[in-house]
Image (cartoon, rainbow, N blue to C red):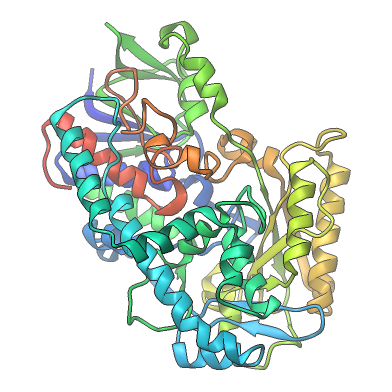
Length: 533
């Protein structure tokens, strides 16, 4: 019987990153995924023959440069196109564009407020200061403080030294961004409601907080995670993988195969084999058994334990703890195949920011109302709507002269207060989205060749994410850092010996694409006696 060093359950981007890192370190790795298309939440599909689109996400992807470079993904065909960061279309016919060039972006802000144009430099400086403190925490494996070891003590000392190096003023600023709401934090910089709503909607899309929710300001950091001082002075670039997000998965698979690893599609794992309280292999749906020294799960926390193990094999009280981990769907997808490019009369011809995405503008109060509807399970009437036409920058995604449109609809409840999602209710959501988009893009409905709508239960059924939660766990402070996914298993190792978690349910979650996979691989490589990767 062939025995591998490591088996990775699930071919999402974290699982593929973990496998690529381990394969480069010299481990024999096997990736098993139940679907025919790899990438998990980043998987692409056809809305109609020849029309390819990111099925579950918007289609933009900012994988940390350290991983792109470290895994040499450019040698395996991965290419990104840097785009200006999009346009917000306002109900009164105006638009607000975001540019990478700081001078141009400040000119854009001056159309709304001269004061806000001046405040942009201070806002960007403070956000990048927070990024400098956060980035090293995301780039290194998280240790579980409850596991007493020399490595843990070193990690705790490093954290203490880093905290002690923060001066009083900087600590004050960091406290503000980690405790205030988006609205309160932005009020400290800007006066224009348009400018504040643009930044808040960009930060909060896909989250389970509203613009007035405490601690929400920290989401303003996310778009800047790969930004460095002096790079542009404007809004960080939107990164479009050429070929769609599946191009990232394809490059990672190429790395795995180049270093002797294996990838199997349509190979669903149903059970983890146990021997003497250790994980020793997996069982596939067809009954096949495969053994390995380490088992690494790219499934979310609940799927990893509640579906792969008999509950009696788990430690006392562990099932209850898993059940308390909060996962809630908040985003639906509407994917469109278009017979012609959509037109947006409010945007000047040739505006380069249009390729970076289109957001339908709302006020803070309208966003808060949409959040409250989501919280109460009410079908959305005015959700946050983010749109990308990726074929504008990557014509390979659609037939010549035609286009695809990817629409992310935020604050869509997983379950409704008065019953489940039905085909009629999904059709009503589709009609609402198309009607809202048509207000800014006349004639859009007549250009639609095919449409696909996926609400959170569809996402759960398609790719196995509990509750259709694309973040694989709420990003509240009690479910971050050494509390992600929960106290006692924050270091990727789990109570089941030789069974590890590498999905976005683990640190750093979705805050760094592939980060959890790379961090988990470092821990597993050390346990296998492998170096490098």
